[in-house]
Image (tube, rainbow, N blue to C red):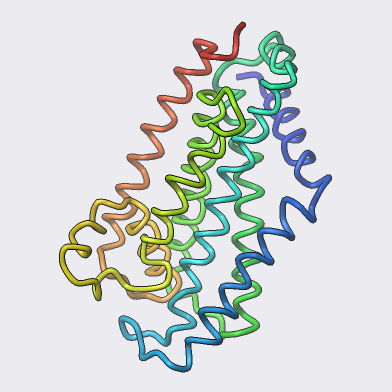
Length: 253
């Protein structure tokens, strides 16, 4: 393990998105915060409790997940893809860095951005609803695990993509539908058939419910199920990404 090289790459990735905080942190924070106004404040007073929780606190874990997952994915995918387009990925490949250091460097930077946006979103939620943190350990595990999984998935997308349209395919046509159908604004328990059964095949449902368990103490599904799914996705995505980076797939011209 090249510790110096890893720290250098990680530092570069963090400084890269901190150079434009308005675009990388403030903009997604404002976008996510608008959901509190539109769904929470506007509809919260008109809706009954959801799974024993008032509506506004109920949507907080989902919105934290939404901001964190999107930004973790976008950071790692855009960073590596831009290097491919500009041709500077060659500098990365000739550096004394193995696939493990490259993976951890990009993923670490993306996790920092995702967690910053997620925690700031949570902070904005405190302006509308009191702090609720029933299980701190479970909350931390799902926050870190979610940020890691989507950071690694962003790397996979960047390695595979050859055009800007392709890099936008995943967040637009995969992540966005799965996220909004993942129980962020409603409980899947209340869905009629066959939509309830269909929702059970959406992995984001279990991530959102796991985070909801950590923050609010209630969940439709056992938190261990969400944790196991998150760990399996993390392992599978890591193995795939490591293999792609080790081969230099679509990176070595």
